[in-house]
Image (cartoon, rainbow, N blue to C red):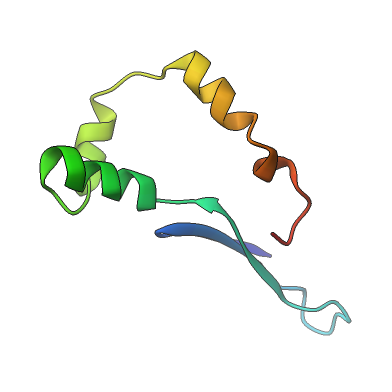
Length: 80
């Protein structure tokens, strides 16, 4: 089982099946809400985007998304 926690930093935890020889593994996998929280504080004076209201009002900027997805950190093997 893999659990995802998207807090300030996003992290993943692998929980192996009971009785397995595998070990539990957990690691951060990239930014979670920290970047949006910072933006909201700087530009809206709010600690966070309540219920995603502001984010939901926008549109995807495809070239920026592609540039962000090209970040080398995202392509490193876990754990990071």
